[in-house]
Image 1: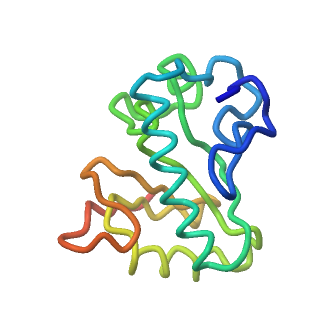
Image 2: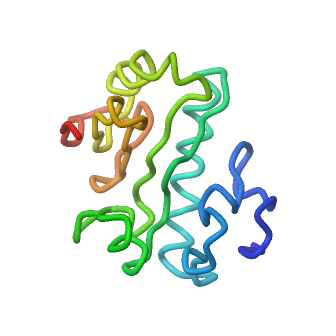
Length: 141
């Protein structure tokens, strides 16, 4: 994987640039846990994109400690481990509907951030898209 090439695909629908946001500090170590977590989450996002049927915009993905601090992230944020992503539909008009739809089908943790322009998904409980069982925690931003 060429983490310096923003157009490099990491999955069917998502690219390096969506992970790094043009910030070299967000480039993961090749072969490490962070890279593996990014790739696992990208596969989950591909499933969401397929069923939603419209592009999904990533607003935040992997955040190493210095980036997480700079954006005011939680000190124990799942973004630190690349197990979290903040997303929204391509059409902001659909954000409330998108959030409700994700709440039904995402079994990992979910933060209701539609009022702030995103929905937070994470895999802290190793669950994901339509994985079943007890859903992860839910909270409001």
